[in-house]
Image 1 (cartoon, rainbow over the protein chains, first blue to last red):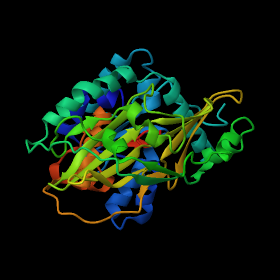
Image 2 (cartoon, chains in turn green, orange; image 1 turned 120 degrees about the horizontal axis):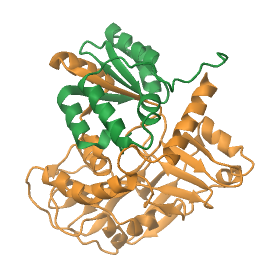
Image 3 (cartoon, each protein chain N blue to C red; image 1 turned 60 degrees about the vertical axis):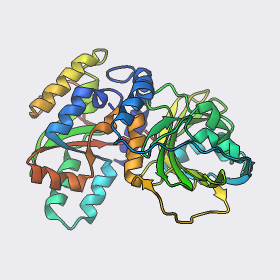
Image 4 (cartoon, rainbow over the protein chains, first blue to last red; image 1 turned 180 degrees about the vertical axis):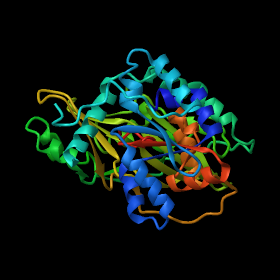
Amino acid sequence: LRAGLLSEPNIIQKLNSDYICTWALPEEVQALVDCTDSDPTRSMAQDLLANYRPLVEIMVLDSSGVLKARRSMLQDLELPYQGTPEKALEHFVAFLEHPEPEEPSEYEPQEEGSR
Amino acid sequence: LKLRHRFGIFAFVLLLALLPACGRPRQQVANEVKGDEIAALNSQMPTSAKWSVPQLSESGIMVEATWGEMSGFDFDYLRRSEHYGHLLRELNVSEPERLYSGTDFQVFLPRQEVSVGEVWSLSSENIHPFLSQFHPDFNTDLNMDASGAYALLKAVSPQRWDVMFRIHGQFSLEETVYITPAQFAGRLRINTEEGTVEAFELQIPEKRAFNLAYEAHGDGGSMAGLGFVTDMELRSVPPNDASHSWTEQLETADAEKALARSFYPFEKIEWQSLQSARTKARREGKNLFVLIIAGVLDDQSC
């Protein structure tokens, strides 16, 4: 992720021009939920945790902090495009251009006991 | 759930270790950063006075080394391992004290005059003696992105230089267990009139939940995990925290950012804290790009 997609010059440019960017560990988001005095911040942090799929989740929120779209690094960007990194880049650029809710992934892991 | 999460982190670290980077090969990116990127980053610095490189005298300075406990679920698991556990249990600082000549520290200085904020690379071979005070087998030339070491001039006056540096690397314990610190962050203050080292320190920062990773490959199979270490540092004695009036200086946060950008192209993204990002997004009417990640993004602990 960091040596690949996030190091691409056009991605960096797109993120800096169109987005306000942030990253955090799940533990840090949980600490924010536990400690903040701000209801909107707590609500946003709770949404982030609720929509986080280990181990890397990329989310786009609107300017008021409401989730618009998300992508799992592993399920949506790495596994489907293994061996074709240029397609992963294409997919990621399209996502940043038009952040839409994802379509169900064939790589969605099965819940335990669902078999 | 916690066990599942821990297993997830283990799998993530293993995945990072085994899969090629998405996009260009990691080593290729690292090499590009080491050459043209540094020149490009330096060219973005506002033009300011160049300062001649001080020549250090042989005046000796004592440096103490400490390596605190490596903790966390994953390191406890490794410590209990039949095949690898003894390497951690028997691990001690190689040299708790070492007397250096002042000239030994010349390796942290640039070869030619520099401006405040200007970055230069450090030679892995030349800085190895310092890291070997922890353990003799330390390597900064890793087969992954963001290898190496960089320094910059943080502050300067006619009497003093204040140099900050950042080192990435890996300790190898009998070539079966590899311990990767998040980074070593260092500081060197020099009296330029006398050519002496006034203060030297180098440590693994303790700002995040994790600041250390390991991989083990051998008869016990492959293992990987994250952890936390305290008080892993080199520090000159006696301490010298005297304040000084600088002619030019860079804020610490800006200096840290400049060093981080030398390792990671993605540090050109203008990252905000989660709280300030929300405020800024609302103020500017922009969408938020949020990355929630199980390991630290901007260091080598994951």
